[in-house]
Length: 153
Image (cartoon, rainbow, N blue to C red; front, side, top):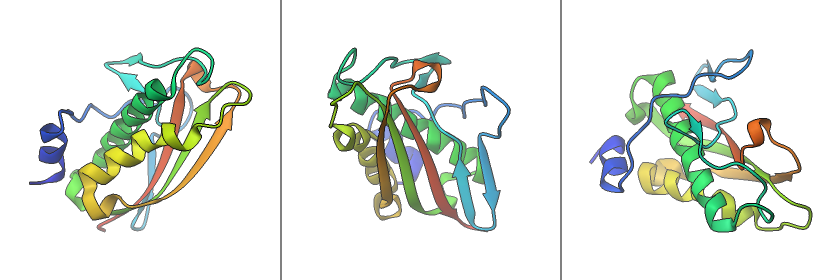
């Protein structure tokens, strides 16, 4: 079973890669590395999760938001490589959680992205991760992730 078949088996469909919303590229490739720009929880062109974790949103909603961000990151990686099978491995996932003061559930929220990557990419999905809480987020998004992946040249 390939990566996109595993996605479908898990009940997910790879969306089209979201367009940039400002003056940047959605991804950049240098050598065997692809760096995605920040991926937000877009679903069908709509920001699916807005607001702060620990205030308007629960950890469970944040987990789902992070999972959507991960799907969008996979869509960017496919746009960069033409085929998800060209991903050798994820190297690093950086996650930013839009949260209220005192919120400490950043790791649990970002597990939404990590769990998806691990389930879909298997051993190639194992990655280092950064989890940071921030008080404001572009477009009031709940979560944002950036991915660095090693890909076949």
